[in-house]
Length: 281
Image 1 (tube, rainbow, N blue to C red):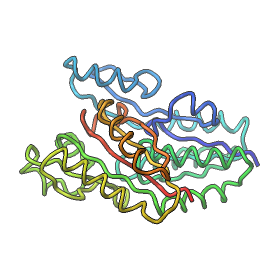
Image 2: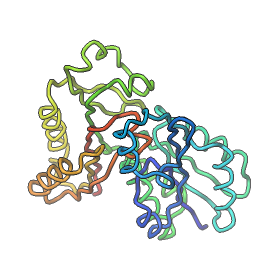
Image 3: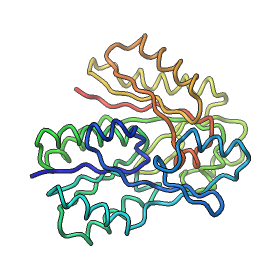
Image 4: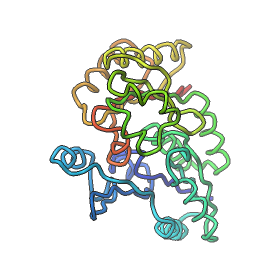
């Protein structure tokens, strides 16, 4: 059985890496006024943050249409018997459910829709692992079993400069506890049961980042090999410095640098930064 791997644009896997690993992608959209852009195709993260800085109103976002998803599945059916479709958390987007609906409309290919329960390159790590297994002949059931194993050690914490974007967009559970002090705290957030929820209220950006680093350090003390990523919203230098700091301290962790692209950046705002990781072995 020949199995394809499909994800969406919020995995933020660079195009050349997707191509090298035979990973297929459906884009989400960002909408500035009357103009709609396909993320990772029509608009890059750099373009997005520049447009926001230039005074464009913060855009809206939309998931891929069911029609575009069925078309992608039909295209894959020409060359594959099955597809593993890995999407951003169902608790913050309807993309997962839209793919479930699309899969029921295409009979020519066996579709396995997987809820990453997370987003950004942490979602991408699932797709990359699935692609490696698929390219080595693993069955869909074997791939799903490995993804579920990864999920047991998958962690991600992040902070935002301003919670108002997440609260206004309805992406943050428990926001009411913070609304009265949006400007006073830099909360550490994480995913719980597919939703973004507050983990801890912290007074300054520096202390919030230090707390995230301490959570990471506590989690990786078992001697295993780990894969991690630092993810930023237009904070290149800060993220690079943090990556170098972590690499100097932990030689058993493979750390990548990634970004919050247009869709996720719309909801987090510029200045957000996060750290995610999972145990490889």
